[in-house]
Amino acid sequence: MDLHTLTAHELAEKIKSRDVSARAVTDAFLARIEAVDGDVKAFVTVTADRARETADAVDRRLAAGEEVGPLAGVPVALKDNLCTEGVETTCGSKILRGFVPPYNATVVDKLLGAGAVSLGKANMDEFAMGSSTENSALFTTRNPWDLSRVPGGSSGGSAAAVAAGEAPLALGSDTGGSIRQPAAFCGLVGVKPTYGRVSRYGLVAFASSLDQIGPFARNTRDAALLLSVIAGHDPCDSTSVPRPVPDYRAGLNGDVRGLRLGVPSQYFAEGIAPNVQAAVLQAVELLESLGAKVETVSLPYTEYVLPAYYILAPAEASSNLARYDGVRYGHRTTGARDHIGLFEKTRDEGFGAEVKQRIMIGTYALSHGYYDAFYLKAQQARTLIQRDFAACWQSGIDALVTPTAPSVAFGVGEKADDPLAMKLSDICTLSANMAGIPALSQCCGFSEDGLPIGLQLMGPAFSEETLLRIAHAYELATDWHTRRAPL
Image 1 (spheres, rainbow, N blue to C red):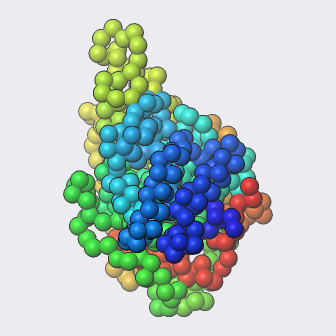
Image 2 (image 1 turned 45 degrees about the vertical axis):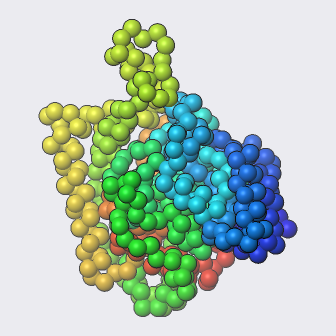
Image 3 (image 1 turned 135 degrees about the vertical axis):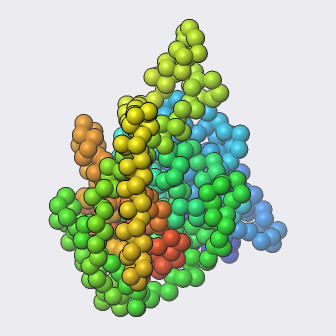
């Protein structure tokens, strides 16, 4: 039995019943990392000794007849912008090389409390700014379905680790599509929860009003399992919502009869690849055949999502990244004559080109004389975008169905010199972050080249249970999620 091919819930059941030890599972995934990560390059840091210690502790508790958590012995990969006590956290940037946090992010503590085994830290675009992991200052992660292509970004390492069988579960962060777009490119389920559903404490900030942590998994049942563990109120995060967490797995009943699904016309316009559009519309037809009611809807302010996002997100990044100055932690330049020179030279050496560009855009948008013309206008556009979605929910729509990305995974280097084309990779995902609503991506087919195609579901705030229910019903009627990357 190849343990690395099993799903998270299968592993959890086998470990709890003691059909297999947590140590054996951990060793199997560490062996898989050793075998394939030289090609995939999903991991920045592999914490093998820690993983084995955690697994051994799970086995001891099971042998003693103690109760264990729902993820006891299940390996997980962590995006490298989640603080991990005693383990280097780089955010894919030179400026944080050598930074070892003295505490865990809340989601990391919740995983450990549930018995999960952390395998290490996954690669990402620097400070989560990018759509391909090519902006990582460390190396570029490869797509397990085709090593000449990108896995998406910014959570490309997390997605590639799960798709390559190096971990059954992973955590990523999503500021404008950084979970869902890699999930689409790698044929996975990826969930961006409602803003405030999952604590951001210990997540290194990119854009604080947009960032959310969420799961990667091979199927909806695994995604529901992981989301149930990490969701919930956290007093350490002032934006965390004190709302009960449902048992997301209990809602996976395979029934979509009577649900009203909206298909926004703006998401099927020019720029969406024909094979992507065809696969998504076929998925819509299948959901309709299962009893869902489908209707075309309009989100007229969609055209303002991209320009508004690329003012607001850089503006918040400009503020958040001002803390990296060479004084407190991370990279510190040598040879600076004064404190201004220390700041300037440290940042010049530590930040990559994409991060510098976004900091400059954000600083400009916030500067005196331009704040009202840019930042304020973008916030007003954001309100109109939110009202678009609110009107859908008020009309009785339960969820919206769209493509996750306008194309399948593109080649490494293909868009590196075209920043607009790169940013358009997230055109379908940005709006959920702007509106603060939950969204999910799952595989709905493959291209002629054998590359996964992503289907996106979006719903009202705190409707993750409904989105997972719809996605699960689709999985029961198809087998796309059972296919594995040909490594």
